[in-house]
Length: 228
Image (tube, rainbow, N blue to C red; front, side, top):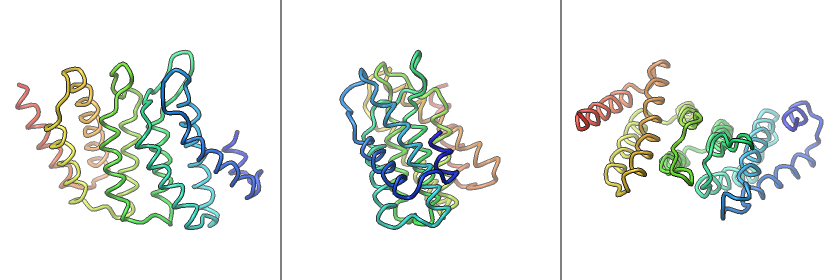
């Protein structure tokens, strides 16, 4: 409903700005526990903000100050968000990582985006791959693919094959140095390997980043050789 109100020009700029800043404030809501389910408010606020970013960008109404505030606050939110549940039985979709990724994609696609944020956003993806739910469950609701869309948006804005390959290498090297209990280790490993598998086939189908493809192939070969 809100998406249609915005895209069909049913709200004026003042109303959209009020909605935007309300949603940005919501991203700073209670991060203390799962119990009160504040994640639903935060998560769906990111979708509304993404719609506003796309609308303003399309209509050339996004000024530098507002854009910078949105991008930096989104990065802070995605760094802080701990409730990474996907579908919650009896309540619906929380999906904070997926929805937050959609907002990052909208920001990257904006003509206001600066490449100096590339490493910040790649590091943000790395951190999110280490997150598990309260009961140590890993991502099961296509969160890996939604984060791949961020990579694809960065590539469209000039992220190079060598930079992506180096980041992928760092991702696995950092994981191999990590010190986790057995269950946590294997669940994070699944997050990372699922993400890399998805990335590999997206790059392969789109015939992009052959160096990164080769790096992922090498890593999986090493990984499976060690486990055999």
